[in-house]
Image (cartoon, rainbow, N blue to C red; front, side, top):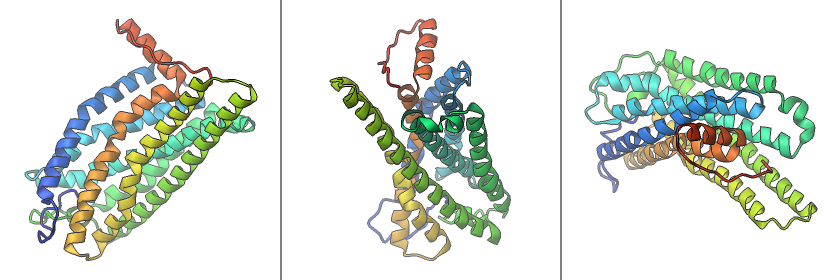
Length: 326
């Protein structure tokens, strides 16, 4: 969806869309430096980790997806500015927004694979033969990239082939650049991505609930009164699910409405509010680029230990808590 809606109905109790675009654009620009720093550190650490486990393979792919998503933030933000050129807006429609969304869904699917990996490791050890095989994780990660970029990104870029009109700076700017086949593909892609997201969400919630129940049961069976360990386990799972839900659920609650609005005439006031909510929700989703690198510390002991060692080598003293049940 275009982020350049500037001429919707003004007879509505809503902020100016030009103002919303300026505010959200500023938020994207402010998000970029910390996201680049955190993901740069994550890439730095990942390069020093050997791919000896399925988790490390998934984590490295997740780092790559988050870094690409981070690099898309500045041009995406620039295209939202009121004085952005038509060429920049067209570039955002044809390439930048497509890369942004595809990286986001790649991250979501990789997070679901990580959840499944931990489920096999902790709850269903019998699945270790396949689920804990490094080659299996490499194949699955490759399939995610091919499925997302091959089946959605490349066709979308190809079918966004119409010349942009300088006088069309409304909410349907991006849609006006799509051929009829491109419009149809767009609708199918939105439905496909929505379905993937909700399926991945169900899998992630299910896996972490089972993991939590298994770990707490092991505490009880061992007769342990380690209240601190139980709290850490609950906190870790709560943070993972909280970050996932806060970042991605709001955006997906408005995506179907946005897609419907782009292809069907709707009430101007409703359209304005949908655009505003969508832009804010998209920025919230982008904050995941900052939160993921922090979650790596909670999810992976090897990553955490390597980060600590590398920071000590640079003369930086840091210590994270350790949990023997990871």
